[in-house]
Length: 314
Image 1 (cartoon, rainbow, N blue to C red):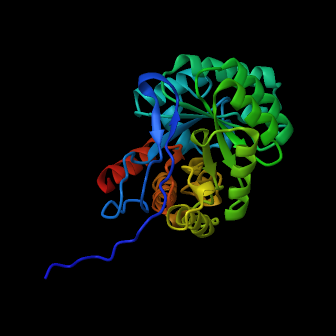
Image 2 (image 1 turned 135 degrees about the vertical axis):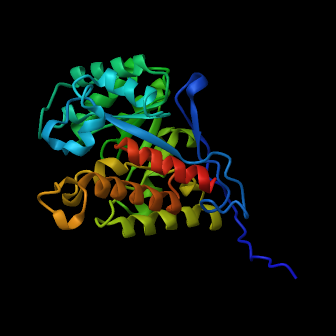
């Protein structure tokens, strides 16, 4: 008698959300079972890998091993974006608006938005615009970005409880997608989705960002919360937790001590580039298994490894 695995019954499925417009638009979500449990349900859209760029030169904020693949374009965000697409096959770009940070460059919102628009106009792939986590500054920047990039269906992040009325309203008015960000908590994630719905944001315009911890820096807790979000949506019928999930992996991993220590500083940890790329890759793979529908990565080798994993698993 052939082995018959016990099959889980699901009451819901992850909603589909479209990012971008035209032929290059990307659909995420749609899964009706746990990640890669295709023997129990459908997974019509394999998870996506996005590549991040910054709106300024990262300089000393990045170690040399991750600057190397982009060394000729780090001072030109448009050229950087095109290189990610043309050389490294990026299907989605994430613009980190680091120059807006009030604790660093603190560039005026108008300047930041102008750079974002220049990048968006130069590419055809979907674009995610990621703020700096300062409610006041992000509200200023994202409202301008939403207006100036009207009709491009950007995804805007982080939209948090402290600024959702301003940023989500702009996304609603100019037809962009909202990335709802909460600090690793199932109930907070659900509550923000409810608030966005009350504001008028449609379910097919919401992506969840449960906040990401890197390998060795809270990854286990992130995994657990994402797993509980997925379980509540798929098996417990919680309609407010059926949005696709995005994880800002590269930004977390590459700021850790282990990713930045050189071979001379930490010879016992092995080659720095191999170490950091594997930290980024393992973090991304773990989060994909926990339910992520999109991961944001920095190093091209991590991108290639994670794409290979997705292809084999799908």
